Image (spheres, rainbow, N blue to C red):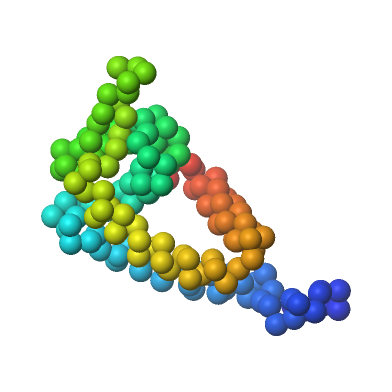
Length: 163
């Protein structure tokens, strides 16, 4: 609902209830579309799921990482990451390398022969996000990302962090 104290630039913008309605109707479509994004042909023979996308995204954007660091970034238990890494390593999507500074520690990387295919899988989402984010100012992009983080953390707290 608009008030006289709202800046003129906000005229026509949805109020909180209208924005909630819009996002509750839009979010299931966004999630469903993301889940239906198939792996590229080079990865179709592997048993990959959307949950693997975040793990591989960190490895593409940030390079090889240890299991504990992946678990911290993904906000899951190290055993969960170990199971995922083990499965993807057996399939030939990931590889474990010895950490040169600590031989007891494994570093996880995307297998070199799968690197291009994994980057192709991430590219579809990146293209869509680029189209959305290029329309925004840096401040608006930051606000959008902060908003999603608050939403996600509030949902996690409401349902229990591991639900």
